[in-house]
Amino acid sequence: MFMKVFRIFGRNIRDAFKSVFRNFSLSLASIACIIITLIVVSIAMILSFNVNNFTDKVEKEMTIVAFLDRDVTLERIEEIKDEINIVNYIENFSFQDKMEISESMMESSTDYRMFLEKYTTRETNPLLDTFHIKVTDINKIEEVANELSKIENVNSVKYGEGMVEQLVKTFDVVKNISYGVVIALVIVTAFLISNTIKITIFSRKREIEIMRLVGASNLNIKIPFIFEGLFLGVLGSVVPILVTIIGYDALYKQFNGQVISPFIQLKVPLPFTYNISIVLLCIGVVVGMYGSWRAVRKYLKI
Image 1: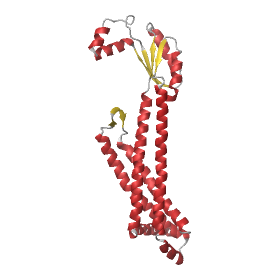
Image 2: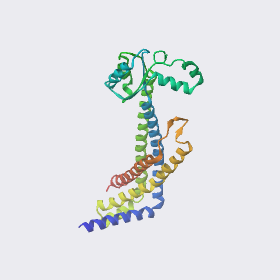
Image 3: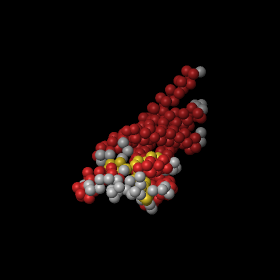
Image 4: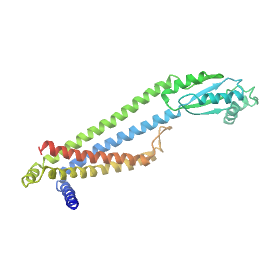
């Protein structure tokens, strides 16, 4: 029984493979449609994931800066650390002593050195000790800032009020649009490929009628066409996959992994392009098989 099923399965694959090349002009039209639409989908996915990568990076880099009172003691600073630890939505934080800030500023500029070198003790140093806090959720940044400002000896809290909230809203809109574009393109791709394959199969209506006349069951007629759709999907995916892997790698090297400025980083090609290639292959195969099955079932009334 198993061997019989295996032989039938192998014969269907062989017949489907032969059919692709026997009807080469029509198959080529289907493959060309798959190539064009999958390249468009690939471009949309690359843009979408890179936009999301940039927005995620910006969100992760956003930091709350808490300035302490000038006369705060080292003992009180340790207590403030404990109080910050119990605030919700804080991912991590770091402390910068005003003497360390002063030294860093003097190393960076001779003007700063001339001004700050006379302040050699904490008591006379005009700078403020600071905490740099990162939150787990960018949408909670205002809530965390308000909690930090309530801590005793916290002089002020800065995080780009107003601008951050607007930026977060903008990023959310960009993400939703990019996801929507990719989903819409996948649906359009499915429609285009499906209809192209329907035309291919409809042109072979006589061939299917002959198969029915010689006693072939509906299932035996459908299976070769479904495998044919699979082959068309695989063949049509090859070029988009190569364009994705080679093209994106070349683009990444051309721009040295960034766009406009080092702040806007592109996603590293590997395994990014491999993941997109797998998605493209799956879309091509699934839509090819579905298009063939739907065409045989609906249009030819099998």
